Amino acid sequence: MTRDGSFDPEDQNAREVAAEAGQDHEEFLSLLPHYYRGEVGQMSTHLSRLDLTTDWAIALLTAVLALSFGSVDSPPYFILLGMLALIMFLLFDVRRYRTYDATRSRVRLIEENVFANAFDPSGTIHRNWRGELGDDLRKPTLKVSRLEALSRRLRRVYLPLLTVLLLAWLFRITVFVSGENPLETAAIPGIPGAVVVGIVTAVYLGALLLALWPTSREAKGEFHGEEPGEWKTEE
Image (cartoon, one colour):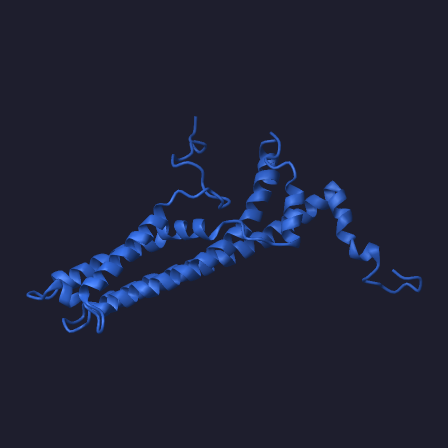
């Protein structure tokens, strides 16, 4: 407030009004749930966008299969175009996954150091979690590398879809039309069939290698372990 009683947004007390909440435990704990709900809502939005990309990829796969096997006159390279489109979806998906993980990381930081400690007061996991969260809110950064995001999304979603198209393509050039030479059937106008087979093999092996590549774990909030927890079991 200025001397005449008017509000001055550039005044230090006005600019740093939230600093008081950070120093007072009661005010901080009353502010935290509102922030947490906002982050969860943002995370849900990013997750919905991620799921939407997957839904479109599955719809594309279905359309490609229907188009490719609807008639014996349908060229086999329709399936190859479907593979190319899936790879494009994968690239969009990787970006969305990294954005989703950035929001999820903040949510998990709060859950690990606030709510987990409230239910089981055994100490915080991150000593400077408030400082880390504040820094990330001031300068948001992506937490997971492109390589790990690519590997995860390939392994969990896109490699199975690409495998379906690969098997469909192999069936299309070998069995679907009897009496045809597979290499001649695999050919694309201007590209011999042997070259097409070599390119498809190289692309699929590359995707398989990326999916299985042992990357360091950077994604935040993933489930730990494969065994189901026993905490729901009644004694």
